[in-house]
Structure formats: structure tokens, C-alpha cells
Length: 490
Image 1 (cartoon, one colour):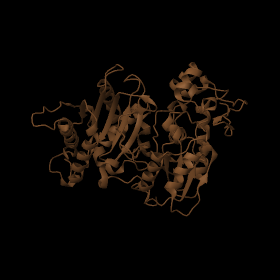
Image 2 (cartoon, rainbow, N blue to C red; image 1 turned 135 degrees about the vertical axis):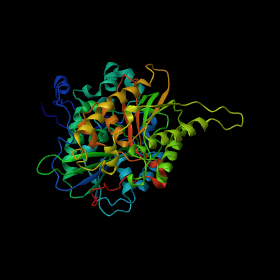
Image 3 (cartoon, rainbow, N blue to C red; image 1 turned 30 degrees about the vertical axis):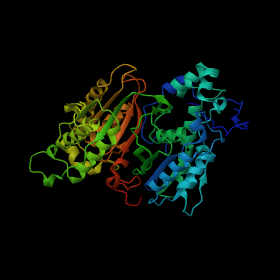
Image 4 (spheres, one colour; image 1 turned 180 degrees about the vertical axis):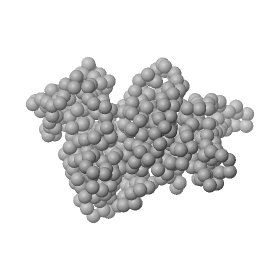
């Protein structure tokens, strides 16, 4: 496979970027399609100590608000809303003792970094490879101008970005190469907790390349304005790339379930994976089997908070595991949904369909391993048969959820699936078409939600809006930068 040469940022002319005329050597489409199966962290350098990296996208910019294609241009600046979003992110990350902050040199990103980094002693570390994707002749155009002027080329950018080419370049593939280069410097930094403030596309590329995912995953792992994503890296015994865990994706200042687009495209179909609340410990359970464990007091609060988060959505169906904690969590969501539109004395509650799905049930072995999820090596410490059973049933469970979505472009449909974090880890992998070995590459907490949109309907690709979102839990939430169970030094 031929090397991608990352171009320097093109010059600016009257607010527009002019593309360099020297074409960049890129892999052919044929080579891209025949890439080997992904492996978590395959391209990363080895580590000697654990490291946490927190990615933040810049706040809303003037060109975001205008609907212009920004790319790596440096004309737009933060809007007042963008400054406010950055301040929310600062408060969100205030208690974390970051050792360093890498930032894109572009004004909208650097200003976001300055707001978040306020009061800290160390200087920001600018890195030109953290600039936004280079989009050459597209930059500065309103989106409707891109459609009108470029027609087929613009449609390729929208529908097949990994193979999209313009002005002799393959922008997404160049971006993926830049992201891999960034990881060399970020992971080489001696700090144990590193903040990175950059842009939508480059943060997507950083998440994807850390997990060993190719350019075909562009626009699948969303990054909203000031959305926060957390990656944990732990060294392997001996040489080799580190273990990687996406602790959370796109924790946003605003609600992740608010109506809107998904990666710039309208979507009316959504699956929300709602993890059941915390349960009583096995020592407190008098009935046989951990599947009988009810919610404890914290779990009851978590389920109510999840129900309140989903209040503004019109949930059509709730699919839940037969386990007691999932049933109780699903019931709390259903009760709030059905009462949401019923304010008058004569009001008839809205009906929400509830379905018990056996394929969402998990073995007691996974209940016993609850605290291990997200730790390095938890999957290898489990017996293989329970893992195989869970993985096999997750295929049927995922298909059952897709069957709940209508196969048309008009009908709105929101499906909530309630279950244990272990089954949701498998469902996320199913959505992303990843093998079972990827399950430890994602982390989910009790009471969290993960949101998946389907802009092309249930037969199209799922777009992951967020994973492990817990901000709705308020004072009972898991802090974004909370140390993992086995890495107290974070």
C-alpha cells in the first residue's frame, strides 16, 4: 500500500482555500476495499504506562452557524454560543489534572482550548496535523453551492467519503494518515492524562485510528460541537501496541437525544441502548441466580433520570431483557413516556409498546464480572463459552431491534433497548460490524445511554451519536475523567 503524504495547509485567498496542485499519492480504491480486518490499536506505538486521552471538538463557529464548508480554512471564529459551549466543557473537565493540551492551530479550535485550559500553567501544544480535514475547492462554499457547482463530486463526498477525491486528493484518506501521525506524538508525551482540542473530522479520525478502523468509518462516530470523547490506553505485556478502550464517545453540552441531524443528514429512525440501573450485590439477593437482582437505591434513581432524559422523545417501543433490573428500568421509562402528554384531568395516556426479548438476557457470569467491564483484559479472564453464547445471541438481538424500525424514509421511529452493559457492548460491535474481540474496546456504565441513528433506514449503516452518556444522571453521574478501576494513576 502506497504512502499518503500529508499536505501542508493550503494558502488562503479572499476567505477561500486554494488547493495545492501537486497530487498526493493515495491507495487505490481497490486497495482500500481489500484492507485487512481491523484490530484495536494495531497502528499505535507501544506504551510503558497507562494513558488517558480526552478529545474535545471546538465550539460552534461562525461558519458552522452559516452552514459553510470549513475544512482547514482559518476564517471562522467561535460564536457566542460556541464560547458558551467551551465554558461548559471547561466546567465539565475542571477537576481533571491534565498534564498537557494539544490543539489544532486554527482559531476556532485554539480559542476553545484557551477557554478550557484557563488557569492551568502549561502552554498549549499546537500541532498542524490536528487541523480540520483539507477540502480544497470546497472550502468556503455554502452547502447548497457545493451541490450546485460540483454535482456528482459533492454527492460522492456525502455518500462515499472514503473514496471521495477533489483537486487530485483523497481528503479522508489524507486525514486518516494525519491522525495516525498525531498518535505518535500524543502517546509519546510523558503525561498520563492528555487533552486534545481539535475538530469534527479529525477527532473522528483519531477515535477510529486508535481502534484500528479505516477511512470507511468516517461519519460513523459522531463529534458534536464541544463533544467530549475519552480513550484509555494500557500497555500490553512485552512489545506491541497498547490495549485501547473508548470509555465514552461524544459527551455533549446539550442532550444527545435532541432532534436534529446525524452527521449533517436528517434522520428519523433511532435505537437507544439504555443500560439498566445498578443492582443489589449478590450477597443481598435471597433468590437463586443474579438475574433476579433488583435495582438498588442508586439504580432506581438512575432509571428515573434516564426516563426524564428521554421525556422529550416520543418513544415508540421499549425492548427489554427479562432480568429484573432491566424490567424495572424499562417500566420507569414507559411510565414517564405514557404520562408525558397527559397534563389534563381527562387526558388519555399515550401507548408505548413494551416487549420482552430473551436474546437481551445475559449469563450470571457477566453479572459477576460487572465491575471488570472497561478494565484491560476482562474479556480474556472470562470463560469462552459464556462469551460465545453472548456474542451469538447478540446477532439475533440486533436483528430484532432493526426489525422494529420501519423500512421507509418517512416514518419516525424511536426504539429503546434496555439491558445489561455486557449485551450492549456486543450490540455496539454488531452495529459497527466489528468482531467479538472488539467488545473490550468499549466501556459502558450502569444507567448510561448510547444513541444510534439510521439516516438511510434500518438497511443502511448505523451512525453512533454517542456511547456511555451519563451527564443526565446529574450528581449521580460517572465523571467523564473518572479513573478506570485498575488504573488509579489516571
